[in-house]
Amino acid sequence: MHPTSKSSGDLGVSDAQITTGQAIVTGVSIKAAAADVVVILYDNTAASGNKILDYTHDFSLEGLSVYLPIPNVKCKLGLWATVTGSGAIVIVHYR
Image (cartoon, rainbow, N blue to C red; front, top):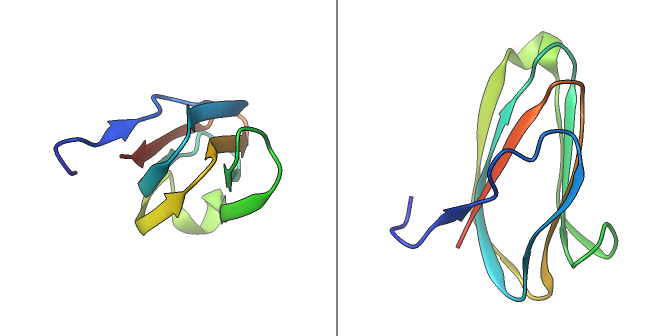
């Protein structure tokens, strides 16, 4: 990670504002417990507008965890995450 990188901390299963204003998303860590995990990231301060990621981690095919490198996707308005999937652990990395 870049020295000035930040992370959201464990978002769990939630809707959460990660940051406001400009940000650059660099990756997402996903750990499934016993179900598929859906992660949607928005360039916004709410769960609407421009989606920058809409990913489903298929627990039965992909196993317990995955790291998704995201090639420096820029957000202008903020960064919002929606996470579903029982027992999921999701961390968004950004700067």
